[in-house]
Length: 308
Image (tube, rainbow, N blue to C red):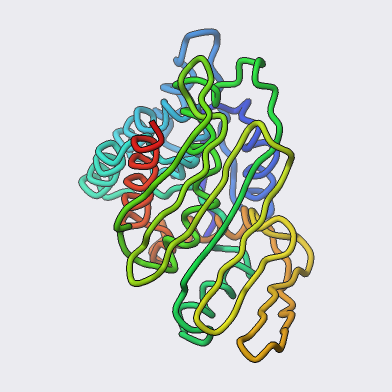
């Protein structure tokens, strides 16, 4: 069943590059795209007042995610909000409490778990086929114009960790399925005191730890690997969002044999949109829901704190 969508911040690059094509490819209907006029948000309010919109996509700068998600919920809309859902654990809990109180769905726009290769990796770990996870590593970086005034480089976006840290941390968080025992991190910060790069480590308990590197000031690089008791698993090529064409999941087992699993390609954004529609129409339960978003918010908040 297609939904009728409204979009907050229609000039968003992620919306035009990825979510709009995904919505259209998934048979969704985009009813309205609202943009600010200078400092006026009247267009946002007008769109939320419409009765012909079922759900809202919120790709506004990070510091506005919580405010406009609450406003959309007050207007009776379901919400798909760009990552990070909010910038704190308290705000994330408040958003989900609000959604539950008004009987609406809120989901964080994290596309990775919906790609076939990601699903295969998570399934291998969950089934126990490759043994218990021991160590994971992921990186996501690219060189940004650090003097360009991008909102991700000040308090509005809150830096590299809150922009792309999700892609490096959440996969291992999903594998662990629990809160971390402890975290450690260091960061390079700009004059706004937000991180332009950060490296860190997370102890998920039970002998499983993962490391990460995110940066706006390093060569373009995306990688992910996992070592388990019985195998080393790597995802050649960009791990997020996932390849449109066939890709490989490489599994090097304890006995030295190497299996290159062919994984079908997919538009992970389209898979995400279809899943959101299924959750809203009560045909599916969230793959990345309240517990995951709250846990992730806690990890990001603590990494920011310890990276000082």
